[in-house]
Length: 477
Image 1 (cartoon, rainbow, N blue to C red):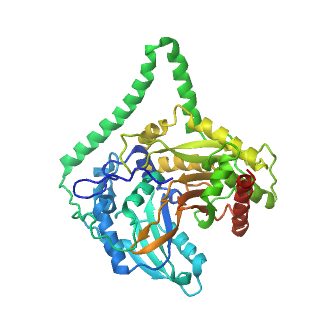
Image 2: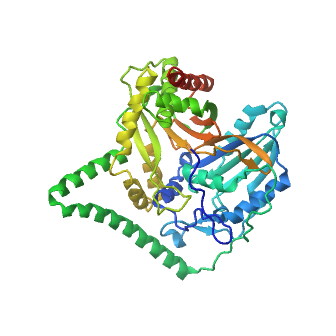
Image 3: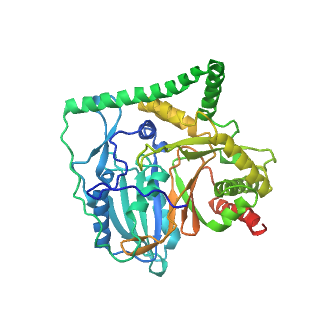
Protein backbone atom coordinates (compact mmCIF):
# COMPACT_ATOMS: atom_id res chain seq x y z
CA UNK A 1 0.00 0.00 0.00
CA UNK A 2 1.06 3.62 -0.41
CA UNK A 3 2.53 5.45 2.57
CA UNK A 4 -0.28 7.36 4.24
CA UNK A 5 -0.44 10.13 5.00
CA UNK A 6 2.00 12.24 3.02
CA UNK A 7 3.72 14.52 5.54
CA UNK A 8 1.84 17.82 5.89
CA UNK A 9 3.53 21.14 5.07
CA UNK A 10 4.10 24.25 7.13
CA UNK A 11 2.92 27.66 5.96
CA UNK A 12 6.20 28.31 4.13
CA UNK A 13 5.97 24.99 2.23
CA UNK A 14 8.38 22.88 4.26
CA UNK A 15 7.46 19.26 4.87
CA UNK A 16 6.69 18.62 8.53
CA UNK A 17 9.04 15.64 8.59
CA UNK A 18 11.58 14.87 11.34
CA UNK A 19 11.59 18.34 12.87
CA UNK A 20 12.65 17.43 16.40
CA UNK A 21 16.28 18.17 17.26
CA UNK A 22 16.32 15.30 19.76
CA UNK A 23 17.37 11.81 18.77
CA UNK A 24 15.05 9.17 20.14
CA UNK A 25 16.61 6.61 22.46
CA UNK A 26 16.72 4.06 19.65
CA UNK A 27 18.32 6.55 17.23
CA UNK A 28 20.94 7.50 19.81
CA UNK A 29 21.62 3.81 20.36
CA UNK A 30 22.09 3.20 16.61
CA UNK A 31 24.45 6.18 16.46
CA UNK A 32 26.51 5.07 19.47
CA UNK A 33 26.72 1.41 18.41
CA UNK A 34 28.64 2.49 15.30
CA UNK A 35 31.72 2.50 17.53
CA UNK A 36 31.94 -1.00 16.03
CA UNK A 37 32.41 -0.52 12.23
CA UNK A 38 30.43 -3.72 11.59
CA UNK A 39 27.39 -2.10 13.17
CA UNK A 40 27.16 0.87 10.78
CA UNK A 41 23.56 1.71 9.93
CA UNK A 42 24.06 2.76 6.31
CA UNK A 43 21.07 2.40 3.95
CA UNK A 44 21.37 2.54 0.16
CA UNK A 45 18.21 3.03 -1.89
CA UNK A 46 18.77 2.13 -5.54
CA UNK A 47 16.21 3.68 -7.90
CA UNK A 48 16.51 2.63 -11.53
CA UNK A 49 15.36 5.23 -14.09
CA UNK A 50 14.12 5.04 -17.68
CA UNK A 51 16.57 7.74 -18.76
CA UNK A 52 19.32 9.91 -17.34
CA UNK A 53 17.98 13.11 -15.76
CA UNK A 54 19.40 16.47 -16.72
CA UNK A 55 22.18 17.09 -14.21
CA UNK A 56 21.43 20.77 -13.59
CA UNK A 57 17.77 19.99 -13.04
CA UNK A 58 18.71 17.18 -10.66
CA UNK A 59 20.98 19.52 -8.65
CA UNK A 60 18.22 22.11 -8.45
CA UNK A 61 15.71 19.47 -7.33
CA UNK A 62 18.07 18.27 -4.59
CA UNK A 63 18.70 21.82 -3.40
CA UNK A 64 14.91 22.29 -3.24
CA UNK A 65 14.54 19.08 -1.25
CA UNK A 66 17.14 20.26 1.27
CA UNK A 67 15.12 23.45 1.81
CA UNK A 68 11.79 21.63 2.01
CA UNK A 69 13.25 19.06 4.46
CA UNK A 70 15.77 20.86 6.74
CA UNK A 71 16.99 17.51 8.13
CA UNK A 72 19.02 17.18 4.91
CA UNK A 73 21.07 20.17 6.08
CA UNK A 74 21.55 18.95 9.64
CA UNK A 75 24.31 16.90 11.25
CA UNK A 76 24.53 15.09 14.58
CA UNK A 77 26.28 17.11 17.26
CA UNK A 78 28.03 15.58 20.26
CA UNK A 79 27.16 17.44 23.49
CA UNK A 80 29.64 19.65 25.32
CA UNK A 81 32.49 17.54 26.77
CA UNK A 82 30.71 14.43 25.47
CA UNK A 83 28.19 14.47 28.32
CA UNK A 84 24.55 13.71 27.53
CA UNK A 85 22.86 12.64 24.31
CA UNK A 86 23.71 13.68 20.74
CA UNK A 87 21.24 15.88 18.85
CA UNK A 88 20.51 17.33 15.41
CA UNK A 89 21.71 20.82 14.45
CA UNK A 90 22.01 22.71 11.17
CA UNK A 91 25.43 22.28 9.56
CA UNK A 92 26.87 25.82 9.31
CA UNK A 93 29.12 24.63 6.47
CA UNK A 94 26.49 22.72 4.48
CA UNK A 95 27.83 22.15 0.96
CA UNK A 96 25.47 20.56 -1.56
CA UNK A 97 28.43 20.01 -3.89
CA UNK A 98 29.88 17.49 -1.42
CA UNK A 99 26.68 15.42 -1.18
CA UNK A 100 26.02 15.05 -4.94
CA UNK A 101 28.05 12.86 -7.30
CA UNK A 102 27.66 12.12 -11.02
CA UNK A 103 29.36 9.28 -12.85
CA UNK A 104 28.89 6.80 -15.68
CA UNK A 105 29.41 3.05 -15.57
CA UNK A 106 32.15 1.60 -17.77
CA UNK A 107 31.06 0.17 -21.10
CA UNK A 108 29.55 -3.27 -20.62
CA UNK A 109 29.20 -2.98 -16.82
CA UNK A 110 25.41 -3.02 -17.06
CA UNK A 111 23.10 -3.69 -14.14
CA UNK A 112 25.59 -5.99 -12.32
CA UNK A 113 28.09 -3.14 -12.38
CA UNK A 114 25.49 -0.81 -10.86
CA UNK A 115 24.95 -3.07 -7.85
CA UNK A 116 28.69 -3.62 -7.42
CA UNK A 117 29.05 0.16 -7.20
CA UNK A 118 26.14 0.29 -4.73
CA UNK A 119 27.88 -2.32 -2.54
CA UNK A 120 31.09 -0.31 -2.48
CA UNK A 121 29.27 2.90 -1.62
CA UNK A 122 27.36 1.15 1.17
CA UNK A 123 30.56 -0.17 2.75
CA UNK A 124 32.17 3.30 2.72
CA UNK A 125 31.27 5.15 5.94
CA UNK A 126 29.42 8.46 5.87
CA UNK A 127 31.27 11.52 7.19
CA UNK A 128 29.88 12.02 10.74
CA UNK A 129 30.79 15.73 10.67
CA UNK A 130 28.31 16.38 7.83
CA UNK A 131 24.64 15.67 7.14
CA UNK A 132 24.28 11.89 6.89
CA UNK A 133 23.42 11.37 3.23
CA UNK A 134 24.89 11.26 -0.27
CA UNK A 135 23.23 10.98 -3.69
CA UNK A 136 25.00 9.54 -6.73
CA UNK A 137 23.46 9.79 -10.20
CA UNK A 138 24.73 6.93 -12.37
CA UNK A 139 24.52 6.87 -16.16
CA UNK A 140 25.59 4.25 -18.68
CA UNK A 141 22.91 1.63 -18.00
CA UNK A 142 21.48 -0.40 -20.92
CA UNK A 143 19.02 1.29 -23.30
CA UNK A 144 19.93 4.77 -22.08
CA UNK A 145 18.82 4.05 -18.53
CA UNK A 146 20.24 5.50 -15.34
CA UNK A 147 19.99 5.09 -11.58
CA UNK A 148 20.05 7.07 -8.37
CA UNK A 149 22.01 5.67 -5.42
CA UNK A 150 20.65 7.46 -2.36
CA UNK A 151 22.84 6.67 0.63
CA UNK A 152 21.79 7.68 4.15
CA UNK A 153 22.10 6.71 7.78
CA UNK A 154 19.28 4.69 9.32
CA UNK A 155 19.46 7.22 12.17
CA UNK A 156 17.62 9.63 9.85
CA UNK A 157 14.53 7.46 9.55
CA UNK A 158 13.06 3.97 9.48
CA UNK A 159 11.54 2.50 6.32
CA UNK A 160 8.06 3.88 6.99
CA UNK A 161 9.43 7.37 7.53
CA UNK A 162 11.53 7.15 4.37
CA UNK A 163 8.45 6.08 2.40
CA UNK A 164 6.59 9.13 3.78
CA UNK A 165 9.49 11.36 2.73
CA UNK A 166 9.66 10.04 -0.83
CA UNK A 167 5.89 10.38 -1.16
CA UNK A 168 6.30 14.08 -0.38
CA UNK A 169 9.36 14.73 -2.57
CA UNK A 170 8.95 12.66 -5.74
CA UNK A 171 7.16 14.30 -8.62
CA UNK A 172 4.06 12.81 -10.24
CA UNK A 173 4.85 14.31 -13.67
CA UNK A 174 7.81 14.19 -16.03
CA UNK A 175 7.60 17.93 -16.70
CA UNK A 176 8.93 20.49 -14.18
CA UNK A 177 6.40 21.73 -11.63
CA UNK A 178 6.27 25.52 -11.55
CA UNK A 179 3.89 25.93 -8.62
CA UNK A 180 5.72 24.02 -5.89
CA UNK A 181 6.60 25.94 -2.71
CA UNK A 182 10.04 27.54 -2.52
CA UNK A 183 10.99 27.95 1.14
CA UNK A 184 14.27 29.74 1.89
CA UNK A 185 17.23 27.83 3.33
CA UNK A 186 16.72 27.16 7.05
CA UNK A 187 18.65 29.33 9.48
CA UNK A 188 20.06 28.18 12.80
CA UNK A 189 19.27 30.12 15.95
CA UNK A 190 22.47 30.93 17.88
CA UNK A 191 22.88 28.89 21.05
CA UNK A 192 25.84 28.97 23.39
CA UNK A 193 26.77 26.81 26.33
CA UNK A 194 23.76 27.85 28.48
CA UNK A 195 21.44 26.88 25.63
CA UNK A 196 23.16 23.51 25.26
CA UNK A 197 22.84 22.84 28.97
CA UNK A 198 19.15 23.77 28.85
CA UNK A 199 18.63 21.45 25.87
CA UNK A 200 20.27 18.57 27.73
CA UNK A 201 18.15 19.20 30.82
CA UNK A 202 15.01 19.06 28.67
CA UNK A 203 16.24 15.81 27.12
CA UNK A 204 16.90 14.26 30.54
CA UNK A 205 13.49 15.36 31.81
CA UNK A 206 11.90 13.79 28.74
CA UNK A 207 13.75 10.52 29.36
CA UNK A 208 12.65 10.39 32.98
CA UNK A 209 9.14 11.42 32.00
CA UNK A 210 8.90 8.61 29.45
CA UNK A 211 9.91 6.06 32.04
CA UNK A 212 7.49 7.58 34.54
CA UNK A 213 4.60 7.35 32.09
CA UNK A 214 5.37 3.68 31.55
CA UNK A 215 5.45 3.07 35.28
CA UNK A 216 2.16 4.92 35.68
CA UNK A 217 0.67 2.67 33.05
CA UNK A 218 1.67 -0.33 35.11
CA UNK A 219 0.52 1.38 38.31
CA UNK A 220 -2.89 1.94 36.78
CA UNK A 221 -3.50 -1.76 37.13
CA UNK A 222 -3.58 -1.23 40.90
CA UNK A 223 -7.11 0.11 40.43
CA UNK A 224 -7.90 -3.59 40.17
CA UNK A 225 -5.64 -5.09 42.85
CA UNK A 226 -6.84 -8.57 41.98
CA UNK A 227 -5.36 -8.09 38.49
CA UNK A 228 -2.27 -6.03 39.37
CA UNK A 229 0.15 -8.81 40.23
CA UNK A 230 -0.98 -10.98 37.35
CA UNK A 231 -0.71 -8.15 34.78
CA UNK A 232 2.66 -6.93 36.07
CA UNK A 233 4.08 -10.44 35.93
CA UNK A 234 2.74 -10.94 32.39
CA UNK A 235 4.35 -7.65 31.28
CA UNK A 236 7.74 -8.62 32.72
CA UNK A 237 7.62 -12.02 31.04
CA UNK A 238 6.68 -10.31 27.76
CA UNK A 239 9.55 -7.83 28.13
CA UNK A 240 11.99 -10.70 28.66
CA UNK A 241 10.79 -12.32 25.42
CA UNK A 242 10.92 -9.06 23.44
CA UNK A 243 14.39 -8.09 24.62
CA UNK A 244 15.96 -11.55 24.34
CA UNK A 245 17.18 -13.28 21.17
CA UNK A 246 14.84 -15.99 19.84
CA UNK A 247 15.66 -19.43 21.26
CA UNK A 248 16.23 -21.01 17.85
CA UNK A 249 19.92 -21.67 17.12
CA UNK A 250 21.51 -20.10 14.01
CA UNK A 251 21.99 -22.23 10.91
CA UNK A 252 25.52 -23.74 10.84
CA UNK A 253 25.90 -22.93 7.15
CA UNK A 254 25.68 -19.18 7.96
CA UNK A 255 28.04 -19.18 10.94
CA UNK A 256 30.74 -16.82 9.63
CA UNK A 257 30.50 -13.00 9.70
CA UNK A 258 32.52 -10.22 8.06
CA UNK A 259 32.25 -6.48 7.29
CA UNK A 260 31.69 -7.21 3.56
CA UNK A 261 28.27 -6.69 1.98
CA UNK A 262 26.89 -8.14 -1.25
CA UNK A 263 23.64 -7.09 -2.92
CA UNK A 264 21.15 -9.26 -4.78
CA UNK A 265 17.64 -8.42 -6.03
CA UNK A 266 14.41 -10.12 -7.02
CA UNK A 267 11.21 -8.74 -8.57
CA UNK A 268 7.94 -10.33 -7.43
CA UNK A 269 4.47 -9.40 -8.75
CA UNK A 270 2.54 -7.79 -5.89
CA UNK A 271 -0.83 -9.25 -6.96
CA UNK A 272 0.61 -12.76 -7.09
CA UNK A 273 2.23 -12.48 -3.65
CA UNK A 274 -1.00 -11.15 -2.16
CA UNK A 275 -2.99 -13.98 -3.78
CA UNK A 276 -0.55 -16.55 -2.41
CA UNK A 277 -0.95 -15.31 1.16
CA UNK A 278 -4.73 -14.96 0.84
CA UNK A 279 -5.08 -18.51 -0.51
CA UNK A 280 -4.23 -19.93 2.94
CA UNK A 281 -5.59 -17.11 5.12
CA UNK A 282 -2.33 -15.16 5.30
CA UNK A 283 -1.13 -11.69 4.36
CA UNK A 284 1.38 -10.33 1.87
CA UNK A 285 3.93 -10.18 4.70
CA UNK A 286 3.27 -13.79 5.70
CA UNK A 287 3.84 -14.94 2.13
CA UNK A 288 6.97 -12.75 1.89
CA UNK A 289 8.56 -14.24 5.01
CA UNK A 290 7.60 -17.77 3.92
CA UNK A 291 9.31 -17.18 0.58
CA UNK A 292 12.49 -16.06 2.33
CA UNK A 293 12.46 -19.11 4.61
CA UNK A 294 12.11 -21.37 1.57
CA UNK A 295 15.26 -19.80 0.12
CA UNK A 296 17.22 -20.39 3.33
CA UNK A 297 16.08 -24.01 3.54
CA UNK A 298 17.16 -24.63 -0.05
CA UNK A 299 20.51 -22.92 0.46
CA UNK A 300 21.32 -24.91 3.61
CA UNK A 301 20.39 -28.18 1.94
CA UNK A 302 22.43 -27.45 -1.17
CA UNK A 303 25.45 -26.58 0.99
CA UNK A 304 25.32 -29.97 2.66
CA UNK A 305 23.22 -29.11 5.73
CA UNK A 306 19.69 -30.54 5.15
CA UNK A 307 17.16 -29.31 7.71
CA UNK A 308 14.59 -31.45 9.56
CA UNK A 309 10.92 -30.39 9.25
CA UNK A 310 10.85 -29.00 12.81
CA UNK A 311 14.02 -26.87 12.36
CA UNK A 312 13.61 -23.22 13.35
CA UNK A 313 15.93 -20.28 12.67
CA UNK A 314 16.30 -16.89 14.41
CA UNK A 315 14.61 -14.07 12.49
CA UNK A 316 13.89 -10.46 13.43
CA UNK A 317 11.29 -8.28 11.74
CA UNK A 318 10.98 -4.56 12.51
CA UNK A 319 7.35 -3.61 13.17
CA UNK A 320 6.00 -0.09 13.32
CA UNK A 321 5.03 1.25 16.74
CA UNK A 322 4.08 4.68 15.38
CA UNK A 323 1.33 6.47 17.21
CA UNK A 324 -0.76 9.48 16.24
CA UNK A 325 1.39 11.81 18.33
CA UNK A 326 4.56 10.81 16.46
CA UNK A 327 5.64 13.20 13.74
CA UNK A 328 6.33 11.80 10.25
CA UNK A 329 9.87 10.54 9.78
CA UNK A 330 12.31 9.38 12.41
CA UNK A 331 12.51 5.87 13.81
CA UNK A 332 9.50 4.34 15.52
CA UNK A 333 9.82 0.59 15.29
CA UNK A 334 10.49 -2.39 17.52
CA UNK A 335 12.08 -5.74 16.68
CA UNK A 336 9.65 -8.65 16.55
CA UNK A 337 11.75 -11.74 17.21
CA UNK A 338 10.70 -15.07 15.70
CA UNK A 339 11.85 -18.65 15.85
CA UNK A 340 10.85 -19.08 12.21
CA UNK A 341 9.82 -22.42 10.62
CA UNK A 342 12.62 -22.77 8.07
CA UNK A 343 12.39 -26.58 7.96
CA UNK A 344 8.78 -26.79 6.70
CA UNK A 345 8.84 -27.88 3.06
CA UNK A 346 5.14 -27.40 2.26
CA UNK A 347 4.76 -23.68 1.37
CA UNK A 348 1.11 -23.53 2.51
CA UNK A 349 1.94 -24.95 5.92
CA UNK A 350 4.89 -22.56 6.15
CA UNK A 351 2.75 -19.47 5.44
CA UNK A 352 0.19 -20.58 8.04
CA UNK A 353 2.89 -21.18 10.67
CA UNK A 354 4.53 -17.82 9.95
CA UNK A 355 1.17 -16.10 10.40
CA UNK A 356 0.60 -17.85 13.73
CA UNK A 357 4.03 -16.86 15.03
CA UNK A 358 3.71 -13.27 13.78
CA UNK A 359 0.42 -12.86 15.65
CA UNK A 360 2.12 -13.94 18.86
CA UNK A 361 5.09 -11.59 18.29
CA UNK A 362 2.89 -8.60 17.44
CA UNK A 363 0.68 -9.25 20.45
CA UNK A 364 3.50 -8.89 22.99
CA UNK A 365 2.36 -6.34 25.64
CA UNK A 366 5.94 -5.10 26.10
CA UNK A 367 6.78 -4.56 22.41
CA UNK A 368 7.19 -0.81 22.92
CA UNK A 369 9.51 -1.34 25.91
CA UNK A 370 12.39 -1.39 23.40
CA UNK A 371 12.12 2.41 23.11
CA UNK A 372 12.40 2.83 26.88
CA UNK A 373 15.34 0.46 27.27
CA UNK A 374 17.14 1.96 24.25
CA UNK A 375 17.05 5.45 25.74
CA UNK A 376 18.89 4.26 28.84
CA UNK A 377 21.33 2.00 26.99
CA UNK A 378 22.34 4.94 24.78
CA UNK A 379 23.83 6.61 27.88
CA UNK A 380 26.44 3.86 28.28
CA UNK A 381 30.01 4.17 26.88
CA UNK A 382 30.24 3.58 23.13
CA UNK A 383 32.29 0.39 23.39
CA UNK A 384 29.80 -1.12 25.85
CA UNK A 385 26.87 -0.15 23.62
CA UNK A 386 28.56 -1.66 20.57
CA UNK A 387 29.25 -4.92 22.42
CA UNK A 388 25.64 -5.18 23.64
CA UNK A 389 24.16 -4.25 20.28
CA UNK A 390 26.41 -6.62 18.37
CA UNK A 391 25.60 -9.48 20.70
CA UNK A 392 21.86 -8.92 20.18
CA UNK A 393 22.03 -8.92 16.38
CA UNK A 394 24.80 -11.42 15.60
CA UNK A 395 22.55 -14.21 16.83
CA UNK A 396 20.14 -13.53 13.95
CA UNK A 397 20.39 -15.34 10.65
CA UNK A 398 17.92 -12.99 9.00
CA UNK A 399 16.41 -9.58 9.53
CA UNK A 400 13.50 -8.99 7.15
CA UNK A 401 11.54 -5.84 6.47
CA UNK A 402 8.43 -5.09 4.41
CA UNK A 403 8.14 -1.39 3.51
CA UNK A 404 5.19 0.36 1.83
CA UNK A 405 6.12 2.11 -1.39
CA UNK A 406 4.72 4.27 -4.18
CA UNK A 407 1.93 2.63 -6.16
CA UNK A 408 1.65 5.49 -8.68
CA UNK A 409 4.19 6.57 -11.31
CA UNK A 410 6.89 8.78 -9.83
CA UNK A 411 9.60 10.86 -11.49
CA UNK A 412 13.01 12.24 -10.60
CA UNK A 413 14.03 15.37 -12.53
CA UNK A 414 12.08 14.15 -15.57
CA UNK A 415 13.12 10.48 -15.42
CA UNK A 416 10.53 7.86 -14.51
CA UNK A 417 11.44 5.61 -11.59
CA UNK A 418 11.23 1.99 -12.76
CA UNK A 419 12.28 0.07 -9.64
CA UNK A 420 13.21 0.92 -6.05
CA UNK A 421 15.48 -1.43 -4.07
CA UNK A 422 16.04 -0.62 -0.36
CA UNK A 423 19.31 -2.15 0.85
CA UNK A 424 19.11 -1.87 4.63
CA UNK A 425 22.15 -2.21 6.92
CA UNK A 426 23.61 -5.53 7.99
CA UNK A 427 24.18 -5.19 11.76
CA UNK A 428 26.01 -8.43 12.45
CA UNK A 429 23.36 -10.80 11.07
CA UNK A 430 23.93 -13.01 8.03
CA UNK A 431 21.26 -11.35 5.86
CA UNK A 432 19.14 -8.22 5.85
CA UNK A 433 16.41 -8.52 3.23
CA UNK A 434 13.94 -5.71 2.64
CA UNK A 435 10.99 -5.46 0.26
CA UNK A 436 9.30 -2.31 -1.02
CA UNK A 437 6.23 -2.25 -3.27
CA UNK A 438 6.81 -0.02 -6.29
CA UNK A 439 3.84 0.14 -8.63
CA UNK A 440 2.74 -3.45 -9.22
CA UNK A 441 6.09 -4.95 -8.31
CA UNK A 442 7.56 -6.02 -4.98
CA UNK A 443 11.24 -5.09 -5.16
CA UNK A 444 13.20 -7.47 -2.92
CA UNK A 445 16.65 -6.19 -1.92
CA UNK A 446 18.97 -8.68 -0.18
CA UNK A 447 22.03 -7.43 1.68
CA UNK A 448 24.15 -10.52 2.34
CA UNK A 449 27.29 -11.03 4.42
CA UNK A 450 29.93 -12.25 1.98
CA UNK A 451 31.41 -14.58 4.60
CA UNK A 452 28.04 -16.13 5.46
CA UNK A 453 27.02 -16.71 1.83
CA UNK A 454 29.94 -18.29 0.01
CA UNK A 455 27.74 -19.21 -2.98
CA UNK A 456 26.01 -15.96 -3.89
CA UNK A 457 24.84 -17.13 -7.31
CA UNK A 458 23.35 -20.22 -5.70
CA UNK A 459 21.47 -18.22 -3.07
CA UNK A 460 20.16 -15.88 -5.76
CA UNK A 461 18.58 -18.90 -7.46
CA UNK A 462 17.37 -20.23 -4.10
CA UNK A 463 15.67 -16.90 -3.47
CA UNK A 464 13.85 -17.08 -6.80
CA UNK A 465 12.84 -20.71 -6.17
CA UNK A 466 11.71 -19.97 -2.60
CA UNK A 467 9.30 -17.33 -3.84
CA UNK A 468 8.20 -19.41 -6.83
CA UNK A 469 6.93 -22.21 -4.57
CA UNK A 470 4.96 -19.70 -2.48
CA UNK A 471 3.55 -17.88 -5.53
CA UNK A 472 2.28 -21.21 -6.86
CA UNK A 473 -0.23 -21.24 -3.97
CA UNK A 474 -2.03 -18.26 -5.47
CA UNK A 475 -1.98 -19.71 -8.97
CA UNK A 476 -3.76 -22.84 -7.75
CA UNK A 477 -6.38 -21.01 -5.68
